[in-house]
Length: 164
Image 1 (cartoon, rainbow, N blue to C red):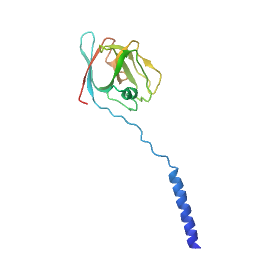
Image 2 (image 1 turned 90 degrees about the vertical axis):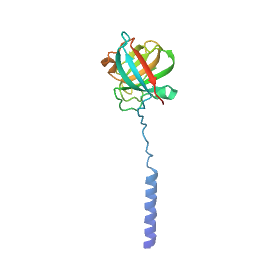
Image 3 (image 1 turned 180 degrees about the vertical axis):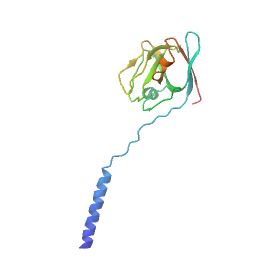
Image 4 (image 1 turned 30 degrees about the vertical axis):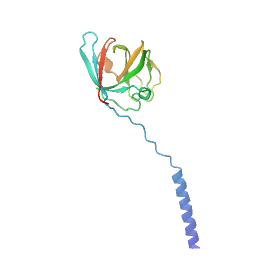
């Protein structure tokens, strides 16, 4: 009788343990993106060509890179940014979906001149942030830098692509 009781108790414990294991939810690994220096960008005053700032940049060129942008980043150093290379020069609109850091969005025309800004964006906000005129390139930098650097319409950007 003791053996039967021991077998029944063991079976019950195994069943309970197996059921509790099957109810555990699988762990989800969050997406993490890390900065990868792909180029260097220089900002210059449009009026006299004097240096404003130099940045290490990542490029967003493919559809996936353009859609993802700086999403899922917890921070970004002030000497870094992301440059979007868009297919055509047209009025652009960006949003902050899944973007955890506030940004300044700088719109540039095909001559690489600043034509429009969206400053101090709200993280995670899906409201469209449009350029006021057509743009071919978009530079995203940390919020507040456009004001700190006194960027103006007509200032220029130049960049070089490093070996990817």
